[in-house]
Length: 129
View 1 (cartoon, rainbow, N blue to C red):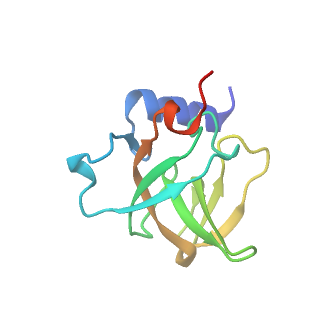
View 2 (tube, helix red, strand yellow):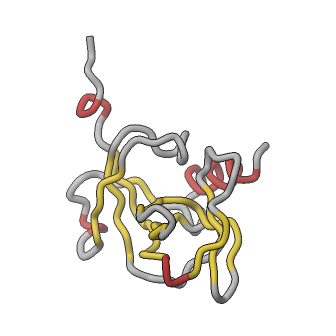
View 3 (cartoon, rainbow, N blue to C red):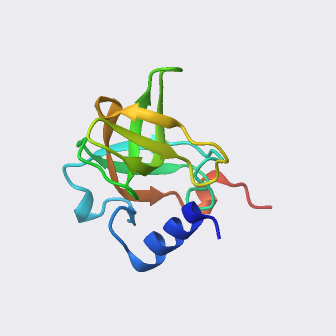
């Protein structure tokens, strides 16, 4: 099994450190955290499908297995990916469904650690026939 998928499986099913927890809208645990929307992309599937929101705690103190948001200066985008390696100066990240990594990014580009994910109900973004 792919090591990234194993990390995802263990984190989501066993609640291991690093993986965000799923929450309902308006949950008490999310008070005081930064809430931002994410769009449906393929890089974090199967964990993130459809649109939703993530809750971020601002920190650059992240470790392997953490889901983080970083600013990618090459294209000016925010990216939500998983830390697969880290040292004192940089983090190495990748999407769960990516063949290639993002490479090394300076810790200064890390905007924070994702601690909660709020997924929209399927009916909010899928038309049912």
